[in-house]
Image (cartoon, rainbow, N blue to C red):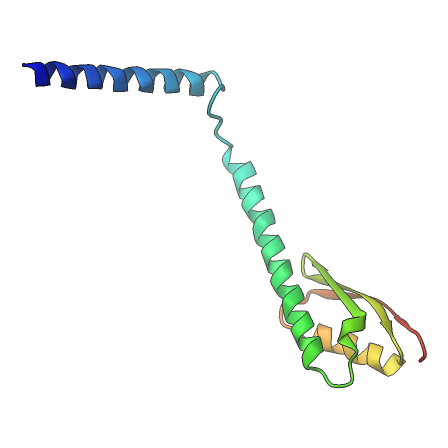
Length: 120
């Protein structure tokens, strides 16, 4: 008999907790649920940042693998698949090689070239 009362008491407590939580949700209080559109937008932004970071890494790796490219003098940033190159190189041939290499990396949508040629 005592066990039966204990079970009833636990069930009543659980139902009361559910009732409070449902009221809080209804009033927009404690727990707030994001709408699907904003959740998808946040996931899309996060995915895009990861893709851009991965693309930046691929571009840097391609530049490091190229001979005669002073890749440490070139800065790479990517946004929405567009690679922005800055920095300086000693020769215009190196600049051309860098831009052509970056254009050849899979996933690059466009290249914005702001590399300066500074003689030795």
